[in-house]
Length: 400
Image 1 (tube, helix red, strand yellow):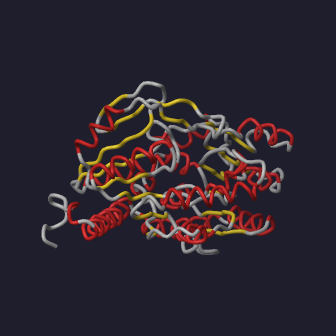
Image 2: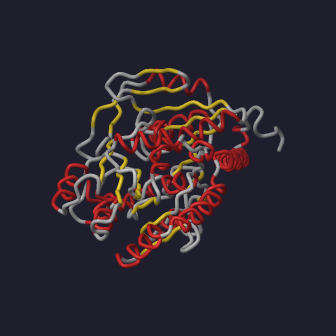
């Protein structure tokens, strides 16, 4: 099958959408499919390499940090991809590249599948001073975009319910993004872990609460600082691995709270190849975010064998079970109680971490690709039923 994936973000950008796309492309290729990617370049000039077509774009960081808008001169990559004629177009973003995905899908008679990665109503502070009006805008925008697709993928049941509440009428299938379990489960050598902890200024005897992700207001990192402050002078380090627009404010807040290193360590942006190492430096994974559609970092941490202490979120239903592989908390008291229990008992941490690793087995990269492929085939069959002219070579049997 020829599969075109479109997204405003792609490597070397580092975020959950890019991670999901890289995983899906790799696994679909392993399954024998030909997968190409259409994305935005990091500048006004486009480029093409290794099946990736990047069109020129302009900085739109005033709308949202890291956002870009495509420049109009892009007929060459568009024509090349139409001539290639994908069997399925899988869009991963609702903005600049979505219009291109629609044009290519229409020209080729291919179904357009879309993954809804972001709960935009949690990001309204970037574009609206009124949360109420921002939510209404998101609802109308989402419904209008998804009405132009053939099928929608939701990374979790939380997102599926959200889209139903928006009035989305297209079929929505829950397909969690999978992860490379072996990559996160592989344990680094004790010497390497000791050296990296020392390089970050973390004392050898300290327990480590690790957070991996963007430092942005919607991630509620303030709560993590509060949780560390509640531990007082205990030999515990809160390790924040990641960068983002809220980092300067968070550094100032930590200083104002008296949380200097090694109580809190800001590691900055972490190269993707080193992310597993940061999980293995930790004893407990912590997060206060409620803006996740699925939360890949939760699954990565579980695959690395860490128990989780996270603010309760519907995306974690059926994933984090209180007292089994971690805790979901609703109050500061619940958070502090869970952390106290885990920090006081290494045996409990290991037992819950082991159960977390077993839970993560349900979210493999291979299963992710299998589920996506099944939906692609269903979408192609539905398109062929609706219009016999769209029967495609090697995909839908002629005369069906």
